[in-house]
Image (cartoon, rainbow, N blue to C red; front, side, top):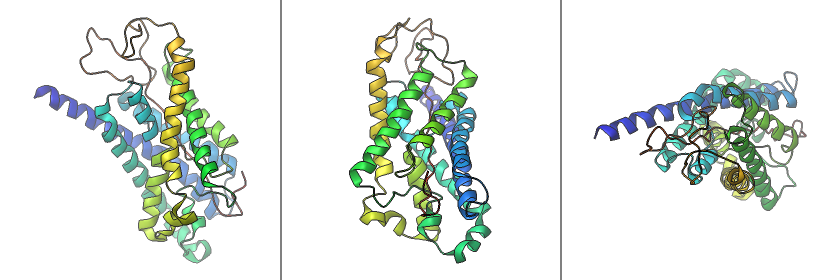
Length: 311
């Protein structure tokens, strides 16, 4: 009974950390797009938006990393569970914190810019302003290309996050990990945002889309392209993260020298503690633990209006 209560208390703390960390990420990301769009490009630039998403990731991981690992991304949590970095018991609670954090951040940004939304083009709830919160595709983008875009972008993210946080590889010191993960997101935004933005995070896209539906934009935020878009930045990142994690493990992770025994049968007793927060598996003995840091996130900016969508 006592062990169950301790587990529940631990998970509750970690869920709160994921909630707050994801909210921090989303406030900076969505806020930067809101400033750019609502000022019609007079305040900010597309490059500033990309940097804001990256910094949001960095700050969010700094906030949550010491408690939960700072995933901030449901696709990352799923992948870490699949590769035994995180207990499956934590999957749904982490998802809850991440999706709720993104939703609350959407509410906060809307309230901060409430008057600006009312002033912008008569206060009409158009897809141009809806794209402040979620991603929308270019007119030319097919379903297959859009799905491939999200799978590829998230695979790159996950591969690099696992490389950066792997203590058996050339992992940086603890304090630099959030900064480097943020730079990964900036780099993805600089190179793969033109098609449909770079959501690469289901919580980053779905929660704000639900918010816009409830806040006055209606079901058109889901019916874009005859309902053939909204599910792509949700499903694609889940697939992409697993692919990226698998590629890293097969090509690099399983071939690195290690010390000690981990969940995959690798020796890791003498490895230094994880940069942010490794998963401490239940039933571990002698203080053994996984040293693959469970951190990452993802972000995206994409402004669907014709004036602002050419990145």
